[in-house]
Image (cartoon, rainbow over all chains, first blue to last red; front, side, top):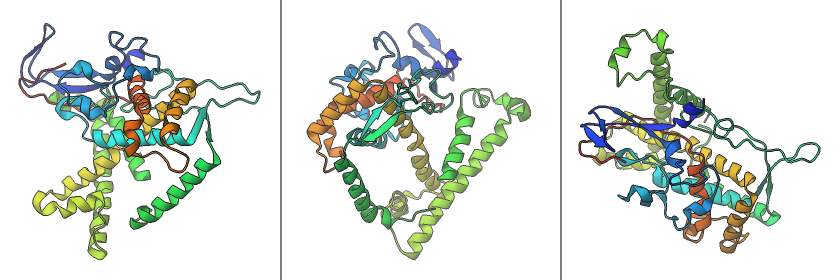
Length: 176
Length: 183
């Protein structure tokens, strides 16, 4: 099972014989790009399983800037794939994900939930047991406590929602 | 929305590594009865039908609305506005719009979910990110894309979420052209 989950990959195909690191990739061979190993290679990511944003200190451009660089050692990550078949949604995705996360962090406090005796409930963050199998890997449902950071922030959210409903959503059909 | 989620579930099952025989690499597999290979053909055809039907319905809805009340500047409106020059076929328009819908929903939400998990697990990192945000954005508005350059630590949190728990390979076969260097 561990092997299976680690083998998250993109596949690619060679149109000509190619030598890479002394190994022949014959024309037409399928090449698997293991995204888990690329992102958890100890040679680049020390203490790879630790969540440490400081790894990216100084790496704060959008992912498309790094994907366009010819230096693969300088890539931030391969979350959007690589090469000519890079995810065409990279620009949308970068904005979507950043805005989603920054608005959530602006608005809410995220904490462990507590059980009936007040003890914090641990989350299973393990990639093998806490995450789904499949084509798209998702965190399995987990308990946590989410509270708004202030009444003023709640008011701002409601005001912006009403505004955008009027300016944008109302133009379009709903309930399709 | 329910139709989109259903089709994404079915599609994910088809695309999961090992769920569908590698018929592009080994075409002779097509001659094996599909019942012996997890009914891959029927399941794939079901996804094909679901995609054609949902994406087609949505585009036809916009086409009808344009005839009745006019263009509204949506993504599909803009594609249709330019289609005199582009001359995309209906099927191409269905998938241009449909893939944006499909590819842009569960992917982003999966990254955001693992980020939330990390924020719960590592409260000091959450606090640091919130301190950075609070220095740039007050309580009277939510952050917008124009704040991006002032929020490098949040960007680092996002990138680390994408590295720490990769949401998986978009396992579509690629084709390399001759002479392409490979990492």
